[in-house]
Image (cartoon, rainbow, N blue to C red; front, side):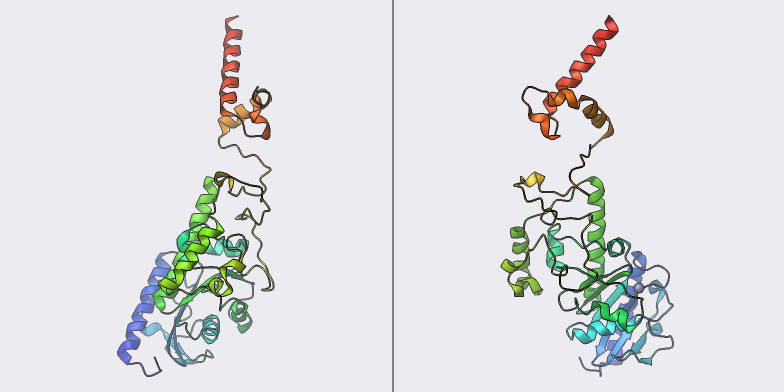
Length: 333
Ligand SMILES: [Zn+2]
């Protein structure tokens, strides 16, 4: 579309931007006046949210129009202070029409922890997001802040901004916004799963199957261009090396491959154990204390199965029964 779209068309995009603003606010992705949204109306005309207005309560004529350098063309309110981030993405990616920046709490938690987004966990993430980058921290608003995304901008449409929030972009307003919704839901699921215990990963082979589906859905993926056989699909990231500082290192969602747990693991064992697998983590207090007290007798069980720290359940039951019987005998005497 060129810069001569009709007034009616522009009004439609203004209404849609207000609607996306309401979704962002109602989802808790932007507190108070946080966050900003943009839409490329024409070659050098970009519609954007105004500064110091809650994204949940924008009206179509609150919105501003700027050129691709950020100079305000129209609007009764000042343009968003973070518009340079949006325009930098649009200049680097002519295919991108819309950019959404906000602070969705679960994804922002990963950006604060600088924890890379793990792959090979949820199939739909592989298909609809692909790899997610974390860009280095910079003071918001200026051009040097905007430039932090440049190394990643061609290889992903979902970027975590270190210690700040997220930026997602796409071919229209909803496409750009949906990526924010997807990354925050994914980060929420990861945090919940982690609280339950383990995060399990599917294999490189299964990841390749998903990535090969993408062309049929019209979704490009840089890993296909590089050749899947040259990519470490699950255990490493496109963005971990060679993208400068910081190179985020996984601390919590460490893939077994990165952790060096390359011993032949059964599918059930190919999980991650948080912060070092040497720490045995009892699953509940009562059995744990029983296991603690009984570990001596359990490891001395005749079949010798309980020596590696994993108690043989049969030996454990037998040991408990023995202790109960001893206690009862003691009480009777
Ligand atoms: Zn921000």
